[in-house]
Image (cartoon, rainbow, N blue to C red; front, side, top):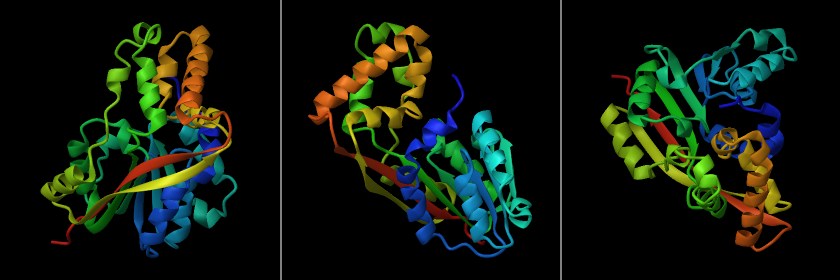
Length: 266
Protein backbone atom coordinates (compact mmCIF):
# COMPACT_ATOMS: atom_id res chain seq x y z
CA UNK A 1 0.00 0.00 0.00
CA UNK A 2 1.29 3.48 -0.84
CA UNK A 3 2.22 5.72 2.05
CA UNK A 4 -0.12 8.21 3.70
CA UNK A 5 -0.49 11.75 2.33
CA UNK A 6 -0.14 14.19 5.24
CA UNK A 7 -1.39 17.20 3.24
CA UNK A 8 -4.55 15.39 2.12
CA UNK A 9 -5.18 14.02 5.60
CA UNK A 10 -4.88 17.49 7.15
CA UNK A 11 -7.24 19.10 4.65
CA UNK A 12 -9.99 18.57 7.23
CA UNK A 13 -7.77 19.30 10.20
CA UNK A 14 -10.42 21.39 11.96
CA UNK A 15 -12.82 18.43 12.02
CA UNK A 16 -10.19 15.80 12.82
CA UNK A 17 -9.10 17.94 15.79
CA UNK A 18 -12.53 17.86 17.44
CA UNK A 19 -12.14 14.46 19.16
CA UNK A 20 -8.67 15.49 20.36
CA UNK A 21 -10.09 18.70 21.81
CA UNK A 22 -12.68 16.58 23.63
CA UNK A 23 -9.95 14.36 25.05
CA UNK A 24 -7.72 17.22 26.14
CA UNK A 25 -10.63 18.93 27.90
CA UNK A 26 -10.98 15.85 30.11
CA UNK A 27 -7.39 14.57 30.41
CA UNK A 28 -5.39 16.05 33.33
CA UNK A 29 -1.74 16.47 32.35
CA UNK A 30 0.91 17.31 34.94
CA UNK A 31 4.35 18.85 34.45
CA UNK A 32 6.38 15.64 34.42
CA UNK A 33 4.41 13.19 32.27
CA UNK A 34 6.04 10.58 30.05
CA UNK A 35 3.60 10.36 27.17
CA UNK A 36 3.39 8.00 24.20
CA UNK A 37 1.39 9.27 21.21
CA UNK A 38 0.66 6.05 19.30
CA UNK A 39 -0.24 6.62 15.67
CA UNK A 40 0.96 10.21 15.93
CA UNK A 41 0.52 11.07 12.25
CA UNK A 42 2.05 14.39 11.33
CA UNK A 43 2.70 15.32 14.95
CA UNK A 44 0.33 18.16 15.78
CA UNK A 45 -1.18 16.35 18.75
CA UNK A 46 2.24 15.19 19.95
CA UNK A 47 3.44 18.77 20.09
CA UNK A 48 0.31 19.95 21.90
CA UNK A 49 0.74 17.19 24.49
CA UNK A 50 4.34 18.31 25.04
CA UNK A 51 3.20 21.88 25.56
CA UNK A 52 0.74 20.72 28.20
CA UNK A 53 3.29 18.71 30.16
CA UNK A 54 5.56 21.59 31.02
CA UNK A 55 8.68 19.55 31.77
CA UNK A 56 7.65 16.09 30.61
CA UNK A 57 8.47 14.21 27.42
CA UNK A 58 6.38 12.92 24.53
CA UNK A 59 7.29 10.20 22.07
CA UNK A 60 5.29 9.99 18.84
CA UNK A 61 5.25 6.69 16.94
CA UNK A 62 3.71 6.01 13.54
CA UNK A 63 4.15 3.33 10.87
CA UNK A 64 4.10 5.88 8.04
CA UNK A 65 7.48 7.24 7.00
CA UNK A 66 5.77 10.18 5.29
CA UNK A 67 3.90 11.11 8.45
CA UNK A 68 7.03 10.84 10.60
CA UNK A 69 8.94 13.02 8.11
CA UNK A 70 6.17 15.62 8.30
CA UNK A 71 6.17 15.44 12.11
CA UNK A 72 9.93 15.88 12.36
CA UNK A 73 9.76 18.87 10.02
CA UNK A 74 7.43 20.57 12.51
CA UNK A 75 10.13 20.41 15.17
CA UNK A 76 12.22 22.97 13.29
CA UNK A 77 9.72 25.72 14.15
CA UNK A 78 9.62 24.99 17.88
CA UNK A 79 11.40 26.60 20.78
CA UNK A 80 14.55 24.54 21.56
CA UNK A 81 13.33 23.65 25.05
CA UNK A 82 10.05 22.27 23.73
CA UNK A 83 11.75 20.53 20.80
CA UNK A 84 14.13 18.72 23.17
CA UNK A 85 11.19 17.07 24.94
CA UNK A 86 9.67 15.56 21.77
CA UNK A 87 10.79 12.60 19.68
CA UNK A 88 9.28 10.90 16.64
CA UNK A 89 9.94 7.32 15.60
CA UNK A 90 8.72 5.18 12.73
CA UNK A 91 7.43 1.93 14.18
CA UNK A 92 4.61 -0.53 14.79
CA UNK A 93 2.42 0.72 17.62
CA UNK A 94 0.93 -2.77 18.02
CA UNK A 95 4.34 -4.01 19.16
CA UNK A 96 5.08 -1.29 21.73
CA UNK A 97 7.77 -2.63 24.04
CA UNK A 98 8.26 -0.26 26.96
CA UNK A 99 7.59 -1.96 30.28
CA UNK A 100 6.07 0.40 32.89
CA UNK A 101 7.48 3.43 31.07
CA UNK A 102 4.66 5.82 30.19
CA UNK A 103 2.39 7.78 32.48
CA UNK A 104 -0.03 8.47 29.60
CA UNK A 105 -0.75 6.47 26.46
CA UNK A 106 -2.65 8.55 23.92
CA UNK A 107 -3.86 7.09 20.63
CA UNK A 108 -6.05 9.04 18.24
CA UNK A 109 -7.65 7.37 15.20
CA UNK A 110 -5.03 4.63 14.84
CA UNK A 111 -6.05 1.43 16.63
CA UNK A 112 -8.84 0.72 14.09
CA UNK A 113 -6.17 -0.10 11.48
CA UNK A 114 -4.78 -2.91 13.62
CA UNK A 115 -6.19 -6.40 14.23
CA UNK A 116 -6.02 -8.32 17.49
CA UNK A 117 -6.97 -5.46 19.80
CA UNK A 118 -6.80 -7.51 22.98
CA UNK A 119 -3.13 -8.41 22.46
CA UNK A 120 -2.33 -4.79 21.54
CA UNK A 121 -4.09 -3.38 24.58
CA UNK A 122 -2.32 -5.90 26.81
CA UNK A 123 1.01 -4.56 25.50
CA UNK A 124 -0.12 -0.99 26.13
CA UNK A 125 -1.19 -1.94 29.65
CA UNK A 126 2.30 -3.29 30.35
CA UNK A 127 3.84 -0.13 28.86
CA UNK A 128 2.02 2.05 31.38
CA UNK A 129 3.61 2.89 34.69
CA UNK A 130 1.44 1.97 37.71
CA UNK A 131 -1.24 4.63 37.96
CA UNK A 132 -0.77 5.58 34.31
CA UNK A 133 -3.72 6.45 32.11
CA UNK A 134 -4.70 5.42 28.60
CA UNK A 135 -7.08 7.17 26.23
CA UNK A 136 -7.86 5.79 22.79
CA UNK A 137 -10.14 7.18 20.10
CA UNK A 138 -11.27 5.21 17.06
CA UNK A 139 -13.74 5.91 14.25
CA UNK A 140 -16.83 3.73 14.68
CA UNK A 141 -18.83 5.00 11.74
CA UNK A 142 -19.48 1.75 9.91
CA UNK A 143 -23.24 2.31 9.56
CA UNK A 144 -23.12 5.91 8.31
CA UNK A 145 -24.16 6.43 4.68
CA UNK A 146 -20.71 7.12 3.24
CA UNK A 147 -19.11 4.01 4.75
CA UNK A 148 -22.05 1.80 3.78
CA UNK A 149 -21.95 3.04 0.18
CA UNK A 150 -18.16 2.62 0.04
CA UNK A 151 -18.41 -1.05 0.95
CA UNK A 152 -21.39 -1.64 -1.35
CA UNK A 153 -19.54 -0.15 -4.29
CA UNK A 154 -16.47 -2.29 -3.64
CA UNK A 155 -18.64 -5.42 -3.73
CA UNK A 156 -20.16 -4.62 -7.13
CA UNK A 157 -18.68 -5.28 -10.55
CA UNK A 158 -16.39 -4.26 -12.11
CA UNK A 159 -14.82 -3.25 -8.79
CA UNK A 160 -15.44 -6.56 -7.02
CA UNK A 161 -13.10 -8.41 -9.38
CA UNK A 162 -10.46 -5.68 -9.22
CA UNK A 163 -10.65 -5.49 -5.41
CA UNK A 164 -10.80 -9.19 -4.64
CA UNK A 165 -10.09 -9.63 -0.93
CA UNK A 166 -9.69 -5.95 -0.14
CA UNK A 167 -13.22 -5.43 1.18
CA UNK A 168 -12.80 -8.35 3.58
CA UNK A 169 -9.91 -6.52 5.22
CA UNK A 170 -12.36 -4.08 6.82
CA UNK A 171 -13.58 -4.96 10.28
CA UNK A 172 -16.21 -3.13 12.25
CA UNK A 173 -14.97 -1.69 15.53
CA UNK A 174 -16.69 -3.62 18.36
CA UNK A 175 -19.16 -1.71 20.57
CA UNK A 176 -18.22 -0.05 23.89
CA UNK A 177 -19.44 -2.93 26.04
CA UNK A 178 -16.95 -5.29 24.39
CA UNK A 179 -14.08 -2.97 25.20
CA UNK A 180 -15.31 -2.43 28.75
CA UNK A 181 -15.19 -6.16 29.29
CA UNK A 182 -11.84 -6.57 27.53
CA UNK A 183 -10.09 -3.74 29.37
CA UNK A 184 -11.36 -4.92 32.75
CA UNK A 185 -10.15 -8.46 32.05
CA UNK A 186 -6.72 -7.15 31.07
CA UNK A 187 -6.47 -5.43 34.45
CA UNK A 188 -7.37 -1.81 33.73
CA UNK A 189 -9.40 0.16 36.27
CA UNK A 190 -11.58 3.29 35.91
CA UNK A 191 -12.72 1.98 32.53
CA UNK A 192 -15.03 4.24 30.52
CA UNK A 193 -15.93 3.36 26.92
CA UNK A 194 -18.48 5.40 25.00
CA UNK A 195 -19.53 6.79 21.62
CA UNK A 196 -19.60 10.45 20.62
CA UNK A 197 -21.05 11.59 17.30
CA UNK A 198 -19.62 14.70 15.64
CA UNK A 199 -21.33 16.81 12.98
CA UNK A 200 -19.15 18.14 10.17
CA UNK A 201 -20.60 20.69 7.70
CA UNK A 202 -19.48 19.86 4.15
CA UNK A 203 -19.89 21.91 1.01
CA UNK A 204 -20.88 18.82 -0.99
CA UNK A 205 -20.71 15.00 -0.92
CA UNK A 206 -17.52 15.31 -2.96
CA UNK A 207 -15.84 16.61 0.21
CA UNK A 208 -16.81 13.38 1.98
CA UNK A 209 -14.97 11.56 -0.83
CA UNK A 210 -11.91 13.72 -0.12
CA UNK A 211 -12.24 12.99 3.61
CA UNK A 212 -12.12 9.25 3.00
CA UNK A 213 -9.47 9.39 0.25
CA UNK A 214 -6.89 9.97 2.97
CA UNK A 215 -8.19 7.18 5.23
CA UNK A 216 -10.87 4.57 4.55
CA UNK A 217 -10.63 4.65 0.76
CA UNK A 218 -6.88 4.09 0.73
CA UNK A 219 -6.92 0.27 0.63
CA UNK A 220 -9.44 0.32 -2.21
CA UNK A 221 -7.80 3.02 -4.30
CA UNK A 222 -4.29 1.61 -3.83
CA UNK A 223 -5.44 -1.83 -4.96
CA UNK A 224 -6.83 -0.53 -8.24
CA UNK A 225 -4.85 -0.01 -11.46
CA UNK A 226 -3.96 3.66 -11.67
CA UNK A 227 -6.10 4.22 -14.76
CA UNK A 228 -9.22 2.94 -12.94
CA UNK A 229 -8.86 5.01 -9.78
CA UNK A 230 -10.57 8.17 -11.11
CA UNK A 231 -13.53 6.08 -12.32
CA UNK A 232 -13.91 4.46 -8.90
CA UNK A 233 -13.82 7.82 -7.12
CA UNK A 234 -16.33 9.30 -9.57
CA UNK A 235 -18.65 6.33 -9.05
CA UNK A 236 -18.35 6.75 -5.29
CA UNK A 237 -19.11 10.49 -5.48
CA UNK A 238 -22.19 9.83 -7.64
CA UNK A 239 -23.46 7.24 -5.16
CA UNK A 240 -23.04 9.65 -2.27
CA UNK A 241 -24.89 12.40 -4.12
CA UNK A 242 -27.81 10.01 -4.63
CA UNK A 243 -27.68 8.64 -1.09
CA UNK A 244 -27.49 12.04 0.59
CA UNK A 245 -29.96 13.52 -1.91
CA UNK A 246 -27.84 16.57 -2.70
CA UNK A 247 -24.89 17.84 -4.71
CA UNK A 248 -24.52 20.80 -2.37
CA UNK A 249 -24.08 21.57 1.33
CA UNK A 250 -24.74 18.80 3.84
CA UNK A 251 -23.82 17.64 7.34
CA UNK A 252 -21.53 14.63 7.57
CA UNK A 253 -22.13 12.83 10.88
CA UNK A 254 -19.19 10.87 12.25
CA UNK A 255 -19.38 8.57 15.27
CA UNK A 256 -16.25 7.83 17.25
CA UNK A 257 -15.48 5.43 20.11
CA UNK A 258 -13.52 6.63 23.14
CA UNK A 259 -11.73 4.29 25.54
CA UNK A 260 -10.53 5.61 28.90
CA UNK A 261 -8.69 3.44 31.44
CA UNK A 262 -5.99 3.43 34.08
CA UNK A 263 -3.38 0.91 35.15
CA UNK A 264 -3.91 0.41 38.91
CA UNK A 265 -1.14 1.52 41.23
CA UNK A 266 -1.05 -1.84 43.00
